[in-house]
Amino acid sequence: MNVEVVTIGDELLLGFTVDTNAAHLARELAAAGIGVARRATVGDEPAQVAAAVMEALDRTGAVITTGGLGPTSDDLTKPSIAALFGRAMKFDEAIWEELKIRWKSYRWPGGIPESNKQQAMIPEGAVILKNRHGSAPGIWLEDERSPMPRWVAMLPGVPREMRGMLADELLPRLRALTTGTPNVIVSRTLRTIGIGESALADLLGPLAKGPKGLPLAYLPSVEGTDLRLTSRNASAADAAHALDAGAAELRAVLGAYVYAEDKTDLAAVVLGLLRSRGLKLAVAESCTGGMLGARITAIAGSSDVMLGGVIAYAEEVKESQLGVSAGTLRGYGAVSEETAREMAAGVCARFGAEVGVGITGIAGPGGGTPEKPVGTVCLAVSSGGAVRSTKVQMIGDRDEIRRRSAQAALNMVRRALSETS
Image (cartoon, rainbow, N blue to C red; front, side, top):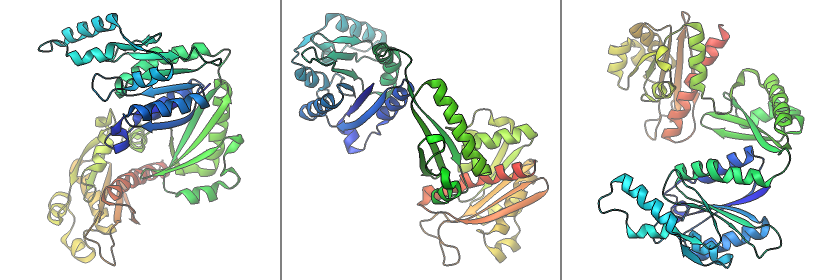
């Protein structure tokens, strides 16, 4: 089965709201073996909604919409699509009674607003998709005039409601339309760091387009480059076997550049390595301003590894709190490997940690010099009685440089622990 997705709302076109619904739908439908042939986003204008849905129906005969089911004047999805099917709108007393009960439970002053009656207006002949997560019921509407099956499923635009209704109501209905063992669309992602997108392709050589006939996508970001393998039109068991084999081939070539699979955070990988060795961690940050500590403590259970950190932005704080010598700051500068090394060793001493990280750099947009341009970042890791350091040139704006620096520091800890294990 292939479907098209139409997400509706002026806020999506204006950029005030990020369209997470389309992405969630694509993932969940793929896992059920249902392909998304095309995605479109339109505003709240009825003519736009009708045109987008009609074009999608003509192509695939199966459309899922999100948005426009609320109680306000801009919520016009239902009448726009009902008109395409030649259906009138009717008031559903049962839905209205359910809404009144819901509002009574809210203890809303004055009771339910009259405007909510719009949510009880339903196209004639439609099937109601029950909403257990909010007030707007979903709609399943079939075109009985067409010789071929044609349908539209309308879901709310509120992400929490849409996701709940997709799982509760729509996916079971779509699965019932298929027969036999469904083929699935499944992806596996290898997360890499320390190597660029083009260098990855060169290193992979014949595998650059994908192993085992599986297409390979390159997804660069501030966290590194993800490699995504995708299996289509295979059973769940065959897809899993092919993805296992393909991922193993990639790992054999890429080695330590791969740090995890799918959505695993590098911070979680580092915490796991520290935990397995019984080591405690402390961090000293300058240009990242606590971002590294936030990445680590965002992982549940990090308290058994993470001791604490120091945000040493000013030179006097580097001296007084971390023991960085005045001579080092005068001779090499606050942004130097020498300073980063003393920050890493100093934070270990201050907190009694076995592993310490030091980060200092120029995140911009100002503050750079010809010798140390914006994006210059020095990193150091103190572990096992030794301190290793590096100077890197980060790209991007201030936020990207800081995020890349935190990720690079985590990777430096990972490599230090892996190489000394």
